[in-house]
Length: 291
Image 1 (cartoon, one colour):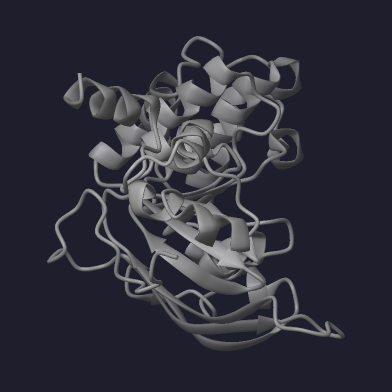
Image 2 (cartoon, helix red, strand yellow):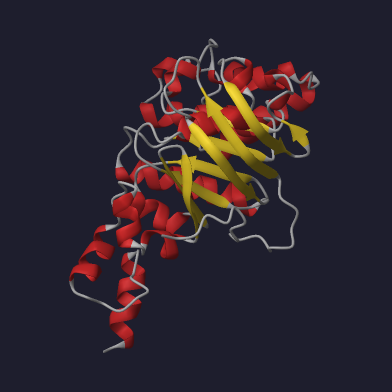
């Protein structure tokens, strides 16, 4: 299995200072028989798109909530170790202040919508940061345009489609220009085209320097879109590396309960030499080189 160094490369140079540093993070909820997270350590650098995968109960949501301080500040838990985001102690800095550093997008967008119009929804976070009205109007418009919702500022959020609601939540998160964006299963319930559109948008944000951590079960999409993958199993970080190295370790992924891409499974069954392809493009290149 790919070694969990916690120092994976991604698209940004290895010499670039991390924006997220997690060291020795251990979390146990009251009354729980075991740790939800056990000794987690990794860094995230500016401009990386990092996929977080693991079985249900592996600790993915707990990890995401530690990055903005929800755990342990709003959700009680015994926590050891440290989480630093943009030089700020995420475990002890008030959650409302951490919102300036970490934008959070959940898998149920409707649960995050509370305002009467789309524009008011995006403005909510800016109001909490005391952004002047004139600047707020500009930033709301820019965020809506970035996610393809321009012209819908006066629409009630709950009249939008599921895909549009997900983009609205994303617009609200990016309007405050946080250096880190955390998405917990943002493509759940979306069709393949909408899922691809979400990842295209995330790639654009990463190109501008935003660090993106995304929880998703679509290993084919992550194989194409992520710079790195982090794999959690029973609360432990068991792999950290490029998608080709992580998903190409078929035995390691099986041990962690992770389905590898279909093209990888077929290549393994056919006995292809390592490294195994993890995308159709990889497979086409391999086949072409042997033509």
